[in-house]
Length: 76
Image 1 (cartoon, rainbow, N blue to C red):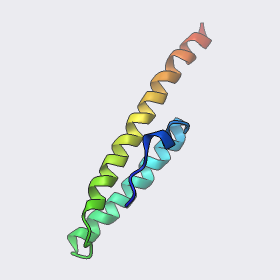
Image 2: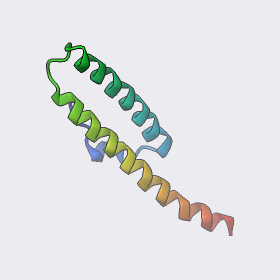
Image 3: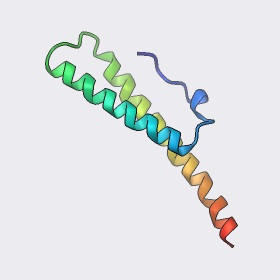
Image 4: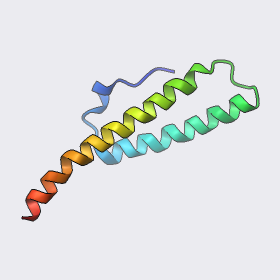
């Protein structure tokens, strides 16, 4: 599995990042299932996928945090 670069994700919206999180979690579940049934030979994909999920969540939180002051300023 190819690891996702942070630079490639920085332009995405929080909604897009949340969709990527959901897709990655679904893929992680499938890989874990394949590992449990001994059909998965290369288990390094599990680690990289977990790290990608963490990367997506971190960037989504950053973009949500950056959007919050903008919404508060607009409300005043």
